[in-house]
Image (tube, rainbow, N blue to C red; front, side, top):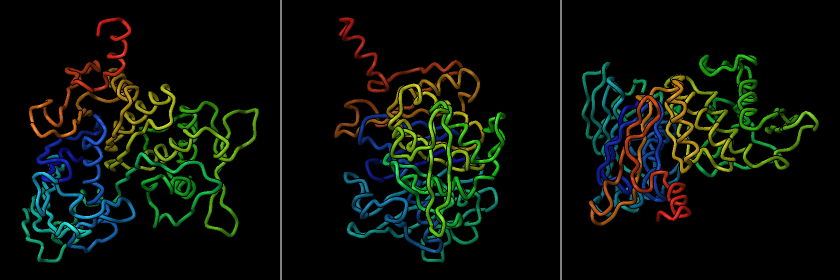
Length: 386
């Protein structure tokens, strides 16, 4: 498990040292740096997967497009370089220093250093051959496998479609950043086994039946039908939400169904120690379904998948707190981080990132201003206390 990520001169951060847990929740105001943390991991994933032998960090690819080096390097303190470092539990440390001209669309590896339990250590200036952004003797590490197989779901997920693209699972092993391959992954792996800790005992332990059962928790009565179009690389998705109706096309069902499906497919397709990054899992969901989402992601993290979410939903947070209290997830397996937009004066409104602690009863020790407090602020106003 990645236990910490450090960023230096990356996007809006001068310096960031962020602890990670099996479930990490990123919250805070808009444009405060939450997505930037995910993007640092995604850039490593994108380069390792699409450009295995590259000695440059690829800023633009199939998963994310971040533009030029000038848009990735901290505008205030950075010049031509940035640093990304990962701590893999007690198994190693990986540090990359990247540099590039401000108008370039990739950044050279200026230095790669670190050590792991299976390697005495390495320190290279990037002039030697690299594999997965590491010297070849150090590249055979479980961290690179986890980064390459990482799943990243953006907030802008694919909406209802008449049909969905169907590809070879070797080309589309994950659901894609917009969930565009979700139906393909569901169909091609419909008989694959789900992690035992996530199995609903009422249905067979296969991916399709487990996804269908989970979808019914969000949308009672939900039944799925997935069929390949003859002589075409396309799949249709049928959805039924009542026994009294036939299957409908996604365009005739609630928008939330197609927003939740990629998350459920990604989670139930994951293996232990896989990385799952999700922006705004609550999009287009009723508050009760948002609560179900938090509980589901707590179960996924408890099953051994490392999950990082960015959310603005107090319903997601509170359902995770309830999961901790019920023993679904230990409090030590949860990290909460609250981000503020950086100000010119560092002490103007507190640190850029605060990390409240949570106890075994789901109680949070501190509530920074802006940390899921809008409901209380509104109620205080109506009560005449503000």
